[in-house]
Image (cartoon, helix red, strand yellow):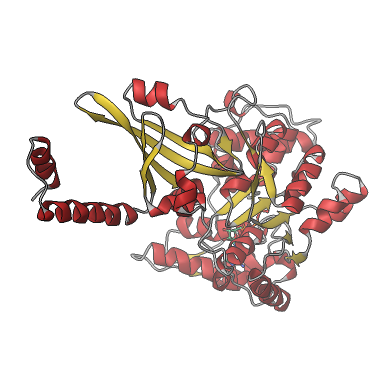
Length: 463
Ligand SMILES: Nc1ncnc2c1ncn2[C@@H]1O[C@H](COP(=O)(O)OP(=O)(O)OP(=O)(O)O)[C@@H](O)[C@H]1O
């Protein structure tokens, strides 16, 4: 018999039989099993915020046994929320992302849905569905692509030093120590960082990359550490987690670390030393479990001698050092890499298979490769799409920038600086302000273009 029908019968004065009693007991047991099979924490409270029921996941989330949970004062746990006003009186469902619950001396970051329980128009209490923020972020990171795609087997090289570096990186990937990757722009620093993450125990956690050169100085702290509601003008209501929090359980890749403002460096060092982060305007520190991989194309020793980079931070980051070789110092890699990129293009465009002409290969070997592997990849791609026949030859059609008639300027007296600034402005203009695309066209890194935009005070929106 349905429990509800049974209840109705009892309400109407029927006498409770043994069968009815076991029916009710069984149905309660069934409900408990169902509640415990749910992967989210679930709790039912009454209008006085007293706990009426909860599932096993709540014990896991709160790290408490059942008896301790029953003693919790939910007015304290939910002190950040107006449960009575918002949910019980207004009879409305509320969802809170990134809320902090106070459970005894612990703080738990979670996503919380509260739904009022209404019978015959009367509010009886509310159902709380609690999901751990760490878990939700893990799923979001997976969907949003915050993960590393590269693995060591995708790092192509025949160079002995580079092969040794890959071996070292493979070995240290298993540890938790910080890694500093040095090398010119386009040498494969991010490739190494992603491969280290994918070869570590953290491979299922997030890989969060942050380009220190791309963040405006005044936003660096909030990007790194996050902030709580109302901590500064323009802050999003409800606060925001910083990149450290987002990378919890995974790897944080600090690209262009040499660009980090000097005043920010001691704050970063403190977080790395203490493994804790406090959001701006926050009242408590959150525990962190983050592996740091930093990269730079600057000579940090030089920066230190100019007092532009702190020594203590340098030593904290430079536990393991990987110095990648520029492409011109590993000429044996030029054709190997070139053919690898060509092979990829042939696979992507399976209808036509193309080959390098002898002259093209000679041109590749003779090039300066200031933009390193990135430049090589772009050049192969350009050759591939611009060549009419199956052989990729040297004749390169004019690039987008060369094709355009630019505003006439008196070139007399134009300094190198002006020329560089003009080129960047043109590339930005041609790419409708998209700095990443402009950087690709100019064969420079994203970090470099952001740095130059800042240095030349280029207003992207007015181009
Ligand atoms: N050894 C390699 N094998 C295959 N692809 C490579 C290799 N090295 C670099 N690449 C490719 O070259 C491009 C640039 O690499 P990456 O972004 O890792 O360089 P980077 O040193 O981090 O550059 P930047 O300092 O400008 O950020 C990427 O598309 C990457 O896949």
